[in-house]
Image (cartoon, rainbow, N blue to C red):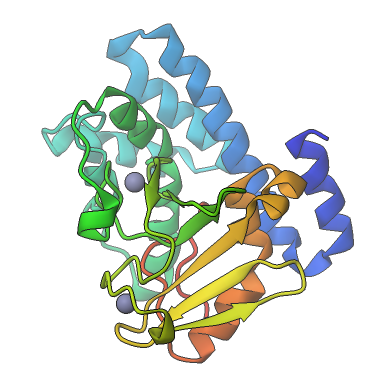
Length: 247
Ligand SMILES: [Zn+2]
Ligand SMILES: [Zn+2]
């Protein structure tokens, strides 16, 4: 089944997830269209094209999208070489919309991170640093394959890399007893580190084969984020639609 159909079915089966799933559909469309833009390699207008695409898919008002464009240009940095500048754009708005703007910037940054990842020659190791080897952001999502090997799936830049099977990906302690587990009815799990209060999600290959998309699995298990956060545990990086703190 195509990912679009899987999401369509999920929206019907789980009406409580309708709005995050609809947002993810737009994110997928945005990333797909940007892939085409990036392939054409018309360097000079890449930024314009990506922001235009972003504005049309997410219905961003013209003033805001031109403001985004000029803020990126005014930073004096190349967003394809330093995609983090997009996450850190100095946008001062009233407190209430701060989270929303953060999410907007997070979604906009995706194609820039993708290009950055593809051009990067030397990677660090998540296993040593507790951060993604490409973008160096914290880890929140991992996949376990049929050989019981675990892989980080970075929600910020899309990097996938192997990491130790047991232990906390944030503080790097590897003591089994210091990790608590929460498992939902689909076998998607949350691993809670008692030492640093970080939690990450993990799921096995069977779950992957059912949904074929780790980021979608992260979204459908939003109820697990609620439970973990209610218990005082922290998610260190957002999911693919920019959601980090829920409770
Ligand atoms: Zn990354
Ligand atoms: Zn820890």
